[in-house]
Length: 491
Image (cartoon, rainbow, N blue to C red):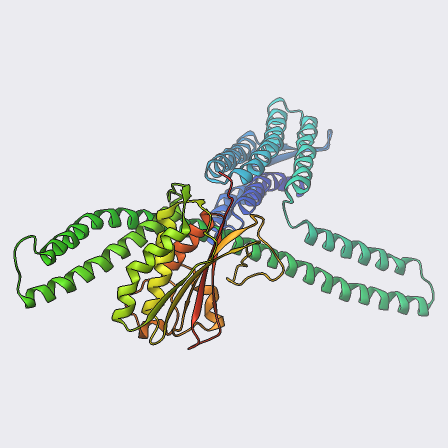
């Protein structure tokens, strides 16, 4: 009679523990303390009335079974069914909130849990109505199906800490096996040996379980860090795209008024609006230089946004590199003389062949290299040379030429802009062609740079299947900025 009174408690407890299992599996954390208190409160009426006449009124000695009261029987069945509905509702909500891969696990778990609890409830409730408790036996078949579902999840999705469970089962089995030897040994020496073996099994088993548990925890931490890093990368990618879009819009909006300022300043300097005094001319010249610098900065920002969004367009057609170099030489000669630098142009005796390229972009790239050479040179000068090389160079991730490797594009035109300027330390070279990157010592000579010119230049060279890199013998020993463009490039 006393043992029979526990059935109602065990019935409700089974449903509560099923919810506990589902909650921990889905949320990967323990149930809150308040939820446990609430579960305990639900159990109080079931426990209080289980040992009273409201549960078991009499014992039938003929059939050897206790007579259960319908009210108590129905109440704990109803409570179990309500908890079952709550479990299903919880799984449905979590299904729609979870990621695609985990949704499959929740769906499979919901099917297994539903079949188990529903069959358990149906068989138990029908048995209580028709007063045939042999039916309760059939309700347990759902448990077999549920265990099969759990086994499938372990194999398919690596669910649960199966390594830890396996290690624990191994240690328990070993301890039971060794401990059972005490029932068969008869002499003292064998008992001592069995005792030592059992102690060693317990010690090493504990160490094994502890190490496996530590491995599982570290794996979980690593997975959490990986997920967090993936989310952070997605967020950074969104922010970077937003930044690129903002730069593009802002640059477009700024370019029109700045170009207008530069244009009107040029017209005033040329005397289109009449003569101006020397003081006004000096101010206009400064305005013109500043606006020109701002126009170049806006153009660089626009190019960066186009590169990052894949919208930088090229117009490839047969053009002469030699013609571009002569035009740039004429443009920069006066600037070099004004700074008391020499500017030399060295071309091969044989004319350079025409190349299929975007002449405007290549002119921009070479012009930027010559302009930088003039900015970061204190004395001496600049030499611009061009030659044909049978094989193009291959540049590694750090910006250095890979020795022994040749470009698959074959013969190239190599343009070199050499200067006698401040030079570049070897450790700074890998960073020069990155966005907003500048050398440590260059701000001493030129404060206004942004570190975008070389980044844009590299993108232009890459689009031509060419290469660009820098060589320097060190600080104070000048630099050589080199561009290679394949002579024959496929459309």
